[in-house]
Length: 287
Image 1 (cartoon, one colour):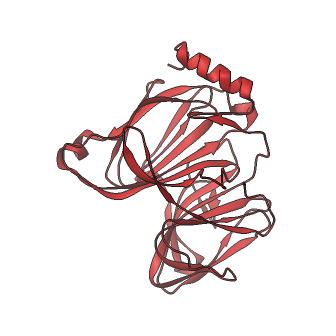
Image 2 (image 1 turned 180 degrees about the vertical axis):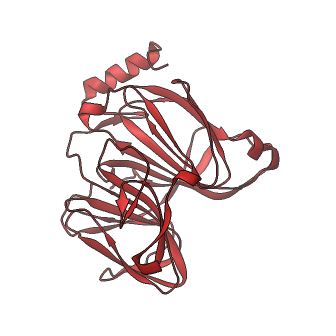
């Protein structure tokens, strides 16, 4: 199932999964019955978890083609390295926006300084599809450091938005986007009400990281680690919080409405393109 139905809301609970060399995480989608939310292909919630000093469990070198990965770190630190020559440490409040496009091999592990001390780790990762015209462009990497990410009050002070890419109210994120999307962390004050605007023709996922919130008119007891996926047709989202406020991940975008062929680390438009991706990786043509 994908969310393309006008004025439809689907409740998508995260479920436990493992990836990399044994990293425990909560996978929101894809899952049975909910494969994607066009143009978004995947949402993983990592932690919060306590990592002991010396632990190096992570994501060893692996390839991607045909999409972008976006990672935002709340706590802890990740070290990124890829075959295009990019190296980066993603610290608390930082994000990375990696365009795999025609092909890249990358790894992500706890950063060396974090490994020495251990501590709390908490992050989210998104896979964002690329339109067919951009799937084979050269790979690129955008390091979005905390100081470059706008964190501003919205809705008259009812909430604070950190926008990675796109626009929410008047807050514009720094990421150079190939697919029309808005991705933001929204921290809503206790006992607040606000309207989150949605671009015409876009669909939106609101993932509740922690706290308590409701969507006016939606009869559901929304729990942390659940995403409410809204199909096209919403102009705004009426949101209300309880006594503890709420922290949410907002993902909104214009559906690409293109065919999707995916297998493991590759997302293309046809099975033939997938076969070529595996052949190119085996031949060492992805770095």
